[in-house]
Image (cartoon, rainbow, N blue to C red; front, side):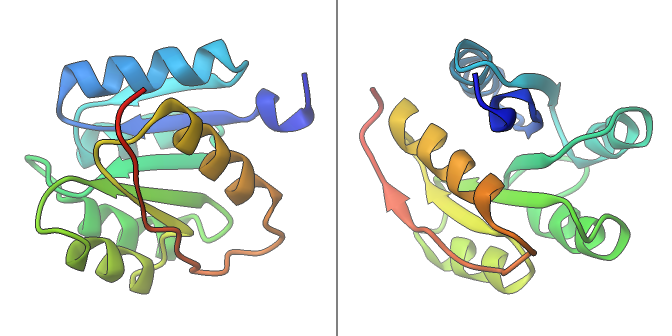
Length: 139
């Protein structure tokens, strides 16, 4: 198990089924996983737990993903961020990377794509605001 698999990942996703699948995939690969249903819940977890990567949906109740990304960039600049969305095509994903997400994934996201993107983001030295628009079938 590599040092990256020891990373703690916070999944912020309002769809409970999607959140559970992401958590299962990441835990199966050896990552520590925290889960939040929306941005406000995520902020509470971030205050209590060290996290290396946030995987956030963009369309959520209480605090939208773009608002969360902007806040995280100001408050936790070292934090890596992967944005994901199935809404509005890739337009919202482009905006997410401009707001500071390291990568952006279009739903549905395959297990392999999720893990590969997470590993790539963890390998990045400094926050680069890069993009990785992948649209994969679930699997």
